Length: 445
Image (tube, rainbow, N blue to C red; front, side, top):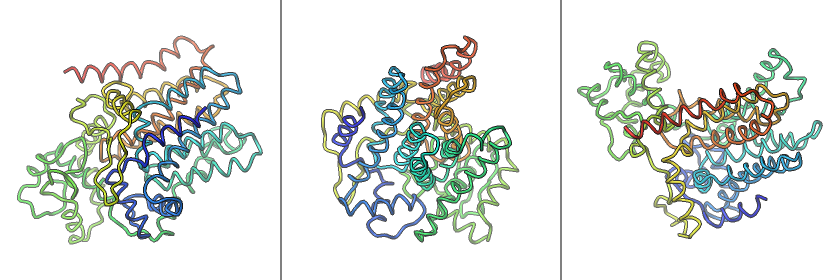
């Protein structure tokens, strides 16, 4: 069922859309020298794939293969169980235009989502005692945990689902199991970075700078360390936007007078740890911090916004030394047009998929047999809301896993909701209705 769409997607997006992030990652893959701004584990993997073929094509094939394999495994299980309408709905989810574009772009988000989806498929297929499938699923989860610093919330529920049922029976055992699973997941990225001798890039400073900028903007008091700027509050007011932190970075189109390198030097000169300074600013200005974080979360989830104020979905490769670009073709044009159009509708808003995952959780908590659907719903929610305190940019790619996990969980929940009360069904659907109406109304003002 999924082989043909996978081949068509590879043909359509070959050799893969390269953004600036991927260009930087491929340069490191070619050199074998890594820093930790982007996941060194992915760069190392890409280096191994160059033995098969140069350029982004092998990574595109891997991303697409994991994506469709995950859907295929879950769909196969449902088909065998006689849930054929659910399997058909699963195919529709897999064909969501925005998801197809994101998976056709070389991104850690796409690779992570594919790994998680295939792990979920293996959990769905696996029977008790099948240790090989369990080991494969664990490998995918550990691999996914090396790809994003906030990947652990997404991986944790699936890792717990791999444990024997007796180990997670009751709240005490479930809590212990969760802690046990969390330890290797949290360790995955730092261990991988250490083994690959990745240089420290100061990537964590991007979050610190953005939060200090937000606190300064909403409190009216300077939260930055001592900088060579006459009036940091006024300068920051002209730079800050709830959309992203990019103006404080060296690549921003309109660089702010307060720059990443400037703040980094200031912390070094003062011999102050950025995280300690950041925590002090949050404690002193909790309301301003909350206002900043909620404003950014609203933007990154595309909730109460105007679409013109948000970054578009990247549809072409950025200029690169290897001349990699996706040739124009009819399927690509159709998918890109559909993806661009869907971003202006609730289907393209991450806030709606968070609401879908929440609704699925409401339904699944009332069902006796939930299979992989319950951990998927929890995974999507935990991962989506991890961006509330941790995001620095409003890019729809961050929510690919929220879309996939939430949608699959919702299909499963609705399929098994025959004996669910009307009240519970209404409660499950209410978040989706409210955020959709809210988003539409905001765009009309």
